Amino acid sequence: MPEALRAQIDRAAEIISQAGGMVIAAGAGMGVDSGLPDFRGPEGFWQAYPALGQAGLGFMDVANPRAFGRTPDLAWGFYGHRLALYRATQPHAGFGILQRWAKGMNAGATVFTSNVDGQFQKAGFDAERVYECHGSIHHLQCFNGCCDDIWPADAFVPDVDEARGVLRNEAPKCPRCGDLARPNILMFGDPLWLPARSEAQSVRLEHWLAGARKPVVIEIGAGTAVPSVRNFSQQMRIYADAGLVRINLDEPQVPSRDDVGLPMSALAALRAIDEVMNAL
Ligand SMILES: [Zn+2]
Image 1: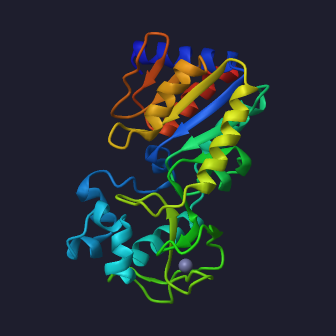
Image 2 (image 1 turned 180 degrees about the vertical axis):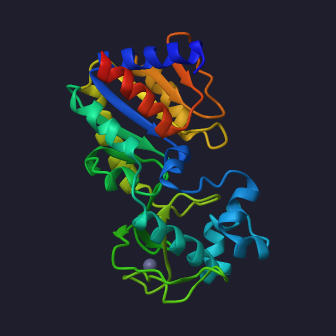
C-alpha cells in the first residue's frame, strides 16, 4: 500500500476514534461488496437485466412511474427481481464493522442512504435510525395516487421470469382502489411519490444530530451522478461541524485537508481502518 494512502487510513481511524457519533452516508457503492449491482452505465445495467436491454429500456426508462402505466409486467419484473434479490442478499462484513464502531460512541450511529434496498436494517441497524432519502423497495404505495397510504411489501412474493424480464404472478394491488401498487421509491420524473415515510425518518435524524457531539460522517460509495448523498455529507460538514471520511473508488476527492478521501471499495476501506483502530 502506498505511503500516502496508509497515512490517510491512519487519519480516518483517528477521526473516527475521537467522534461522539457517526453518520453513515451511503450510496450504491456500499452494496457492491454484498454482490449487488450498482447500475453504473448502460452496460452494467443491461448486463444485470438483459431482457430490458432487448426491449431497449435503460434504467431511467424503467425506474420511472410511466413504466408502470405502459408496461406494468416489465416494470414489476424489474422491481420484483430487485425486491427478491435484496431480500436474499446477506449484507457484507463492513456493516458489522460500522456497528462495532458505533457501540463505542456516545450517540451511536445514524444512517442516511439513497439506497432503497433495506440492507442496513437487514444488517441489524435500528430502523428508527435509518433515513432512506429515495424511499424503500420494501414498501408500496398506490400507482394512481388515490391515497397517502404506504404499506409494507412483505406479503408480496414476486415470481419473475428472468429471461423475459416479466412478472409471472399477480402484481400487488392498492387496498383502497384496487389499482396497481408500485414501490414507494422516488423514481425519475415522479410527482406522485409519497415522501411521508422518508420525511418522518428525516425528522428523527434531525433529533439525533441535536444530541450528537463531534459527529463524523463516513460517506461510502456515493458518487456525483446522483448527488443526494454527497450533498448531505457536505451539509453535515458545515452545519454539524462533522469530520468527513469519504470512501469512493472513483471519486475520493474531499473539500478540505482536514477530511479524508480513500480510493477504495467499501469493505476494503472499512477493514483497513478497523485494523488501525484495533491497534490504537
Ligand atoms: Zn389506490
